[in-house]
Image (cartoon, rainbow, N blue to C red; front, top):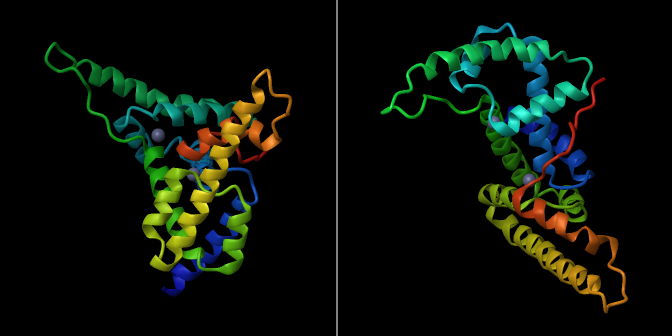
Length: 229
Ligand SMILES: [Zn+2]
Ligand SMILES: [Zn+2]
């Protein structure tokens, strides 16, 4: 490992360890933090930047998920004014007006590039999975991971693909243990909810359906993670 990679890894390790102490998948959390930071930077510093305007025009704005996140960030943070969004989308909307003029009976779609924030998120996912796979070999990191909520399936697979061969058996065994435990919780929750069973579900069993949703698909967050005002 080169020196620069080593120092990047130790910085990434600090953030991943922090994320492991929070609820849910730590890689989902790190990606989401990156997305929010990107929105802050764009709205704070880049609403006059011709390059960012060109990117937004080419993709016809953000995808649905990221557009919703931008709205969430702006609406919950007083420091960000919605006029920044208006400035960017003035370009997007006028571009949409232009390209939609080409729609005819034969041409049923308009050219559109990938959402710029999807590209940022994909890059963050690759980087975080790589860092995570390198950190697995550190006993303290592994211990923290074992006692955390663990990874979602998409990120388990992303880490798995990059993990050193000798880290894989423990990683897989740990994940399968979590799934087996979750399955038990889902069954117990249903059994105890039956009218003829007078045994209350445990808090973990009560939350099992929610865990199943994020464990298989990844985390969704009801509000911005980064608090800046
Ligand atoms: Zn995840
Ligand atoms: Zn997107």
